[in-house]
Structures are given as C-alpha cells and as structure tokens.
Image (cartoon, rainbow, N blue to C red):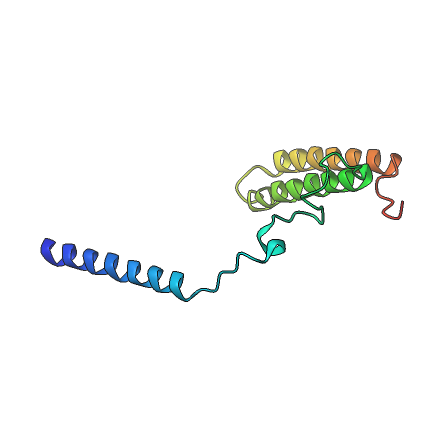
Length: 118
C-alpha cells in the first residue's frame, strides 16, 4: 500500500512538472511591451511623482464605505444570534449598535460627506 502511494506521488510530481514546463515553452512572452510590464494602480502613472495632489473627498468616501462595510459584517451575526439569546438583551445590544450607526451617519451628514457631487 505504501509503495503504491509512493509511486503515485512520484507520478503526480512528474506530470505536474511536465505540464509546467510545457506551459512555459508554449506561452508567448514579449519583453518589448513596456506598458503591460509596468505596475498599474488606480489610474496613477507609476513613472510620475508619487507626491501628487489626492482628492480628500474621494478618500473620505472610501473610508465611509469601509466603515459601513464592516458594520454590515457585524450585523449578520446579530441576526443569527436572535434565537439563541434573551430577547431583551438582544434588543438592547441591537439598539445600541444602531444608535452608534445613526450618530455616525448624522455626523457624516453634518460634515457634507454624503454629498457626492462636490
């Protein structure tokens, strides 16, 4: 039994190496295309200065998105724990959580961060 497993593992190793070697030989690689080889991120030119002005409004909208994304990830376990806990404790925790969300939303509204057309 051990001999069969040993030979199968060697066979799989050889087959995988042959496939990798064939893919390296067949693939088209051009070193002449400089644009495809350069890194690209968020529409910024990597060959220009890294200290260019960045939109603070865009950054704050991104932070708002991340905060609400994490809050949604925290709401899902609250929903599934509804039947496992005492109803009043669950209501108090949920209301406290949503109160924090509403205070944050009110603060963002006061700071005009929800106006996307600035």
